[in-house]
Length: 97
Image (cartoon, rainbow, N blue to C red; front, side, top):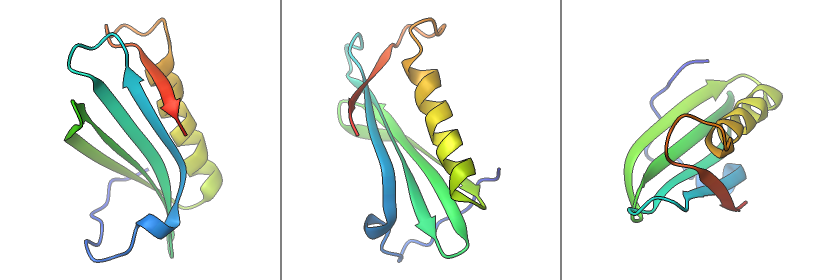
């Protein structure tokens, strides 16, 4: 797994899959996570945007050579954020996929 710089001029919308929106219902600032997988010519990227009140405060990208690895990492991120026993006071739920 490695972070990479994305090409700003590529049309990313048409290659998104596994798109998931999470929201922390107990957050007064309406914290959210938006996680998805993108298909590229040379592999797959799991992308994450997070923030509060609809404002993106953080973006991260993880590159994978195959779809199965990307999907497993995507699901791992969702499991971690939606785990009711997590140590963080923010408890996320899936709003929609």
